[in-house]
Structures are given as C-alpha cells and as structure tokens.
Amino acid sequence: MIYAIEVNNFINSNSNELGSTMRMTLANPETSLGFAVISVDGLGPGTGNVTFQDWVTIAGGAYESAHIPKRVINIELRFIPRDPDPITMSKGDTVADVRRRTYWFFPLTKKVRLTFYQRNLDGEISSYYIDGYVTKNEPNVWSKEEGTNIQVTCGDPFFKSTKDVVGNFNQVLSLFAFPFPVDDEWHRERNIKVPFPISEKLKPDKQDIHNESNIETGAIFTIDATGDIVNPMIYSETTRQTLKLKYTIKDGERVVIDTRPGVKTIIKDDGFNTNLIQYLDLDSDFITFIPGSNVIGIHCDNSSGMDNFRMSYRLTPLYGGI
Image 1 (cartoon, rainbow, N blue to C red):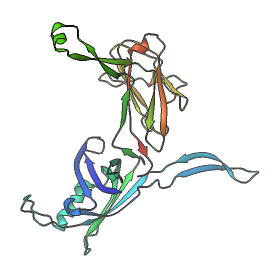
Image 2: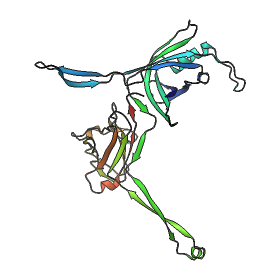
Image 3: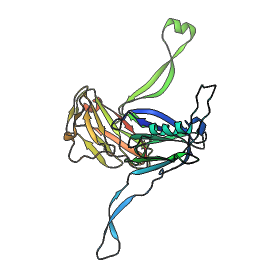
Image 4: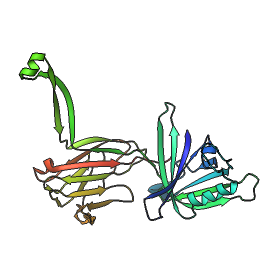
C-alpha cells in the first residue's frame, strides 16, 4: 500500500541535481504542507503498442515489433489551510499559500521526480521513483473545495527502485577463525589463545547476479586495471551475450561500460570521458539482465590480465508498474 509520495524538483531541466523536496503523507495531510492526495492514476503497466504484419493467404498476421509509450501520471490534490502552530512557531497557511506552493514543486514544463513509498504486510518499506515533466497544473481557484490536477508526463515509462544492486568480482571470503595458541611466554603463562583468522581472496571469473526487476534491464560496469588487460570481455551465460573491446586497458586506467536502455556508452574515466565505443567488437552486445538469476563472467586475451581485472557493477531494478 502506498503511504507517501515525495516530490523533488530539479535545479534545471538539463540537470540530474535535485532541488527542493516535499513529502505528502496520504493519511496525514496536515503535515504535508497543506496537500491532501485525493487520487493518483497512471501507476500500473498501462497499455503497449504491438505491430503485426497481416498474412495475405491465411488468417492472422506475424509479429513485427512492440513499443511501450510514455507514461502519464495524474495526481488530484486538495488544498487544506493550516492554522498557526505555537509549538513549531509556524505562521500557518491559507489556501492561496498552498496553491502557490504547487507552482514551485510542480512548475509547468519543468522536470520533477516522483518517489512512491509502500509499506508491506511485514512492515518493510520499499520505494520507487520516476522522472517526468509537468504538463498540467490546473487549480480550480473558484471552487468551494479548492485543489488542483497535476499531470506529469514521463518519457521513460519505467519506475526505478531506490535501492541498487551493487557488487564486484574481487572479494575476500571469511572462512573461520580457529583458536591457535600463541607461542610466547606471556601467553603461555596465562594459557591465552588468540584466534587465527582464515580467509581467502577470491578472484572469480563469473558471478550470479540477481535482477529484482520484472523487466529486462542493463547495468553500469566499472573496470579498474591494476596492470594491462588486453581485449577485456564481459559475457552472460544466461542470455548468451558478449561485450568485447578490441582495446588494452593500461595499468591504473578505469573504463565505465553502461548497458542500460537508452544510454549504452563506453568511456574511459580520465577526466575527459574519452569515448571508446569505436573499440567495441562488431559481434558484441550490450549485456542485458533478465528478471531473476543472471550468470555474468569476465575474460581477457592475456594470461596475466585476469589478475589485473577489477570490475564492479551497479544495477537499478526497473518496474513496469508499482
């Protein structure tokens, strides 16, 4: 069940830097800056466009393509005046104050972020956000119960989890600690035993990564070289995709590969964001993650390169609806 909606505006529409924040708690509009949420629609999967090519000689047609259109979210708000609070020293708000506040948090044609908070039956809280542009802010100024209808149009129709899946291919595994005696006179006299830690530094060439999304998505891979890595490759045993660079990553260099839909970039993080897309092997794919388990591996063409291969990943789960 959704219990709160958070609204963020941005510094400007071309920036990813968030500006002001307002949270509207559905069960307690008095603490939500005078906004009572009456209804919200556009949060489900919606409708998709599927194209078929009709067969000429028999009934039916063949599937050609599919497309998910932009998402439109409509929020109906009611304005609630607030009395002055002597404890918090709040001067209170008139209906006009609340109405003008929507012009700040929902500026027409400007970019905003909507984050929806849900509380599950076990009390666990999950949250999902989506970015869009305000295409309607239409208050009914002359109504007895004044409010407004907000419309946010989202070019990217998918909700994103606020909790990313992160990890790396270079780990230290703690195995156990066994109380070996310490061979010195002071410890022997007192019969004190000191735990001797046992661990193993792992350099796995593949890993099972769980995609919590209910749709396919990509990820951001960051490769840090501690020595030369000749022709690095990332592959998926699950989807049979491979991404290979015909390029040698030198000692100390960092390469960032972004396979997310609508992004798909390969850059060298050298302060200039040098584009390396021209080194992408012709038979390569931008790795995607299907919902659930995905086995991802790494490889390179020089034998010492695997010891130099330090890779981390960040995956943001996507959802067709909440």
